[in-house]
Amino acid sequence: MKKTLLIVLLAFTTSINAQQKSTIPSYSYSLNEAIEYALTHNYSAINASRDIDAAKKKKWETTTIGLPQINAAVGYQNNIKLQRSLIPAEFFGGQPGEFAEVAFGTKQNMAASTSLSQLIFNGSYLVGLQSAKVYLQISENAKIKTNQEIREMVINAYGNVLLADESIIILEKNKTNLEKTLNETTQIFKNGLIEEENVEQLQITLSTIKSAQENVKRQKTIATNMLKLVLGIEMENDLILTDRLTTLAQNNIKLSLTQEPFLVENTIDYKIQENVVQSKKLLVLLEKSNALPSLAASYNLGYNAFGNQFQFFNANQRWLNYSNIGVSLNIPIFSSLGRSAKTQQAKIALEQSKTQMLQVEQSLKLQFEKAKSDYEYSLEQLNTTKSSLTLAERIENKQQIKLKEGLSSSFDLSEAQRQLYTAQQNYLQAMLDVINKKAALEKITTKN
Image (tube, rainbow, N blue to C red):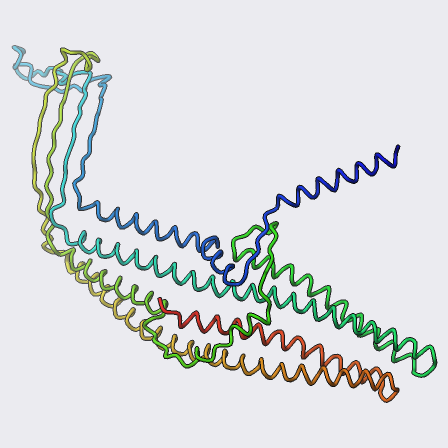
């Protein structure tokens, strides 16, 4: 009975765990799919889109300044104690030289009014409209730059996970081969054909591989979580990568990319700096526009009611109406050269932005040359490390044969194995470098 109950409890617990695991969202992406997902769900991408929405609202807010403005107001006043004034008493038949206290007004006052205003001309408003458009362009260009950075981050993070995967596979293969060699060497030692040091040396190498394997597994967890963060996926969710490192490296070999002409005007950094220069020009216009007159018109309509009792909503309450129309013209005449000083400051800022434009242009050209050189070098390293790996595999295989035949020691084999393991990691890193360096080159050459 107890055994049956235990089996039922275990089955129930297993079922609950399976249900909980099935509720955890799971994602499976190729590199391109991961990039597309990140461009929508990455936290920075989301906020960059919101910046564009905010800029559009700001543009409309600026536009409404020049549109008709209608406002209404309702006011109520209860004079708890009316203010008194002194007037000559003789006005009321009193003695000359004496004064009488008189209170003017009523205890209850209410007023309702509405006003219509329209800006007819204002130089600052016209400049503000242009500035709002530039502000929107800046936000849109910032979104493009954010997308470029996210794309590069996804590629780097995705590649790091694949690198860890391939490293785990290779280390597992190396461990299996080494365990086989260790077993064979142990039998040879037991037969008295080799010294014990040969076995001990292989045991040391095996321990090193096991430690490296565990470390790479931990690094894979960190790399996967980093990729989830870039994608905008919660850490608890499952993530499966469908691409392989070798496939991506092969697909990213594109020699024609280094032959394409570099047009600095197409880069997003250059366009952002153009926005900066344009905004500085508008700042100069803004300071100049402050010397222009401004013209506005308004129409006001209102009603007032008075009484010593609160009877404003009675039908017989008397309301006194008024209305007026007005035009105001503001003409700046003299500011003690204050406006001129502000204009000169704006012009200096404009010249500084133009100098920064030249700096950005030269910096982008330098970045392109470096990115191009790094990508070309990564392609060369891929071929070099692949050849070195082939040689290292041959050398290690020969040393294993020599050890079995008693022609060499385990120290020679260990040295060959270290060369092989280094060559393996160098080749994996070379594949990752090809992917990352191409992403860096495309980031600076992408046309927008």
